[in-house]
Structures are given as C-alpha cells and as structure tokens.
Image (cartoon, rainbow, N blue to C red; front, side, top):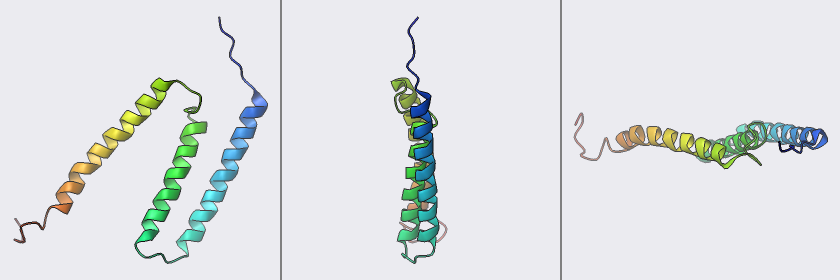
Length: 103
C-alpha cells in the first residue's frame, strides 16, 4: 500500500494563505464598490469573484495536486453551465435584429 505524504504544517500554511488572500480580495471588492468605473464595475466585480472562486477550488476542493479526472469533471461542469447560459443570451441579443416589434 503506498504511503501518502501529508504535511499538516504545509496544509495549515496553505489554508492561512488562502484565507488572507480571500480577505484581501473581499476588501478589494468593497473598495471597488465605492469607485465609479461606469460599465466596468461589473467586469471588475466578476474578475475578483472568479479569482476568489479559483482559489477556493484549487485549495479547498483539492484540485491543485489532485487527480486530473477531478479537473476534467469540474471543467465539463463549467462548460455545460456556459452552454446553458449561451442559448438564452443568444436569444436576448437577437431580438431586435428584424426591427419589427413583437417579431
């Protein structure tokens, strides 16, 4: 039976590093909310949120250093979610192409 190398000090260090990064990004989110960037407000907020989500997935979901099969499942889930978002957005963006109200 293979032995797993587990270093609890490295795990605690990684968790504390991620915690401090998440707190920093939360402060950055609050600071960005008070700055008027026009239409870029949503882009900045989503970029910060995606960065925080990637940090959580890599450390707490053990994607970093884990099985490539886990990365495949997470990627396929994200791809499926993007497909489910694409069709309603395509419908929404194509509504005024003809210029005829209600058609």
